[in-house]
Length: 409
Image (cartoon, rainbow, N blue to C red; front, top):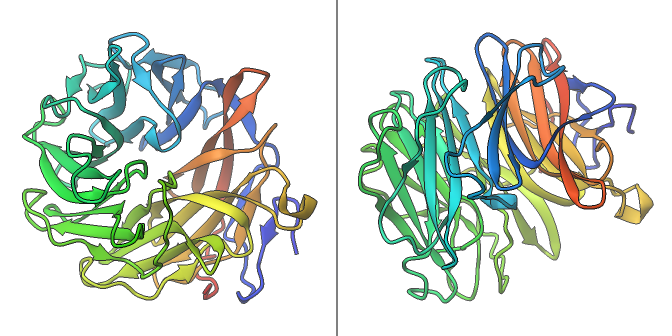
């Protein structure tokens, strides 16, 4: 049964109370595309967007009613490359620090580098950007950004300098750390080879020194499953990657769909897209031993068709998950792509699926941010007009006492 904000409980999962309610009408709040969200402790909402090759940080002081503050982040006009998995990233710390990461094109050679810009005044101004890895700029792309509990800035990306080694058509996964709050980066470290070249990696921390990175590896006969490598010394050395689940998805090409990591207490959660028995879906699993082993996968996307691009964030005692997909009951499964929200409690139980309808056209690459005690912000990209894109925002609230849910398998 689906109602107004489209709360759906699918076959195979016991009914549970809705865990969040969202405003009925999402809004186009900015021109551009590929948003990334962050919230201040004060409640101000910041959103990073890309428009015509430039990167803009938009800030709202009224709960996202409007975004009057608009600051350009990149210091070289028009250099920002962005598409799907390869979009810029935003991270904010409570010490008034804002970090923005993007891929910059290099001339006509087709090469690229990663740049990071830092603000120390909540994004009102940005220092000159720095190169994450000034080494050979073959192709540095599909990057992710995170800041450790001790304040070190980490960037992981897919690097083309080893392309051709190992399995044909693969990249290598590299990581660099800044121990001086983004002013410069230490020498990069190779985490793994034989990495699917267009699926963004994901980072998570368990304490100050333990770092996890998830990526889609390529093994055997074009098997592209999710692997997780772990460092217990702050990213200096890395474990042999562990496969999260034996999906054995064979595909001769890159699916442009990375995994997402989030930590809740001592439990490491991961969500990803794969194809099993001829059906694409989003799953999740967790590890209670630091990424050495994982519980059996569970289905996150229910009966949603064309489900893809999961994104996880911790929210006090639960994990909030968002992804895109189509309602199987709309137009024989070919209705507009909407945004789906689901909450996972500390025991790994998934609550009801909530569908948020797009504003004007199909949604792509949704992202999420949580503001204690109960605010949820979702943003995504939609085509607007004949040749442009717009950033769409929807706001929601968690319902008090609604943690817990169903065992979705």
